Length: 213
Ligand code: C5P
Image 1 (cartoon, protein in one colour):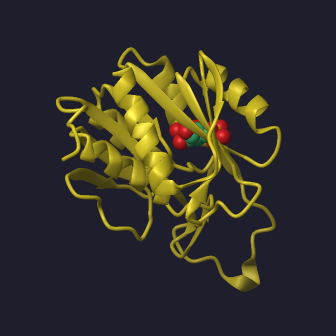
Image 2: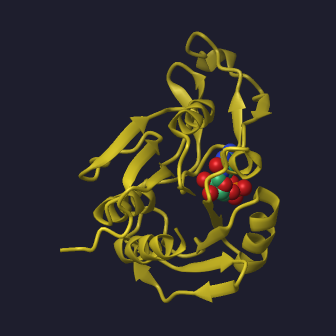
């Protein structure tokens, strides 16, 4: 049996995209299958952690033993994360939409197409946790980048007040795929992992989280 290295620890995981409605039938979103976040929630639960998974709209089954809250928008995700505190660690894997739209109450008609969408910035959930008096002892963010991956991730770690940034090179076929190519950016520097199955990335990350807590 797997040693229960995270027994008694509460870990919060966000996963999937958020959907920001434009009208009742249309939305803005980032591309995200939720697979990496769900695999991380699964791996943490297997180590005995109490896992709260706050998920945007995805079509994935809930991993065994994981407590799941489904949300649609970034604002709902921020509220669900706040409600789930305190936590020993938070792993923010969600691809949160950076902006929301002032949604129309009725379906927009093709003949009356708006010529532009007014965008309002969404709350940055990771950065909020980074500054919060209830900040989890270990705060981990993800960074999907297509270029200058380590440079951008290092800047993001500082800007968001995270302990680790898992930098994800999405220049290839990572989106929705099985494999992931990541660099772990921490106070100790950068560790680059070989291209691994998302489940293996999750297992290794869960082990590292158990080492840290
Ligand atoms: O700034 P960027 O979106 O690239 O940062 C990615 C990291 O920040 C991820 O960990 C993501 O879950 C988190 N994030 C968030 N809330 C946002 C935007 C990003 O928690 N509004």
